Length: 131
Image (cartoon, rainbow, N blue to C red; front, side, top):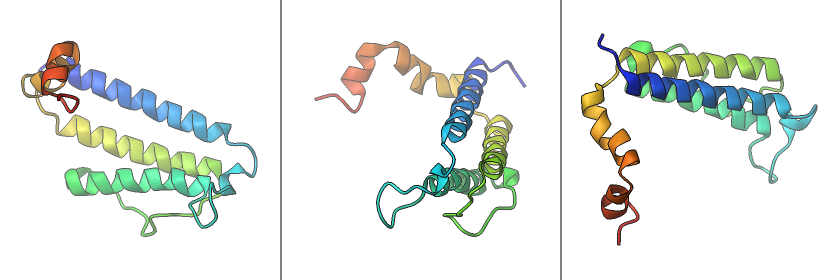
């Protein structure tokens, strides 16, 4: 496969984002996983497990050849941070493998991503903020 600096940068960003998510999970104090922002809303644990579930569904829908067996319940009530971390690691790896295994070329992605990022006038003139 040819060198793909855009793909490498994307996967590096994915890995960093996942590390931040795990760090946030580890910051939840004891008993905090059961907390709900509003009555009847999802718990902190359910929000973390929903991220796992959504990732796995996206892989299943968009790159089924990389799909893994997944839980049936979308809002799993896991109360163990170690188990939630394992789930998140599994789904992060599945997404990473799907992206790495089916990348588009820099020539196709560059003009609609990095080139827009670097050309600030193009965003203003053609982006969602144009008048």
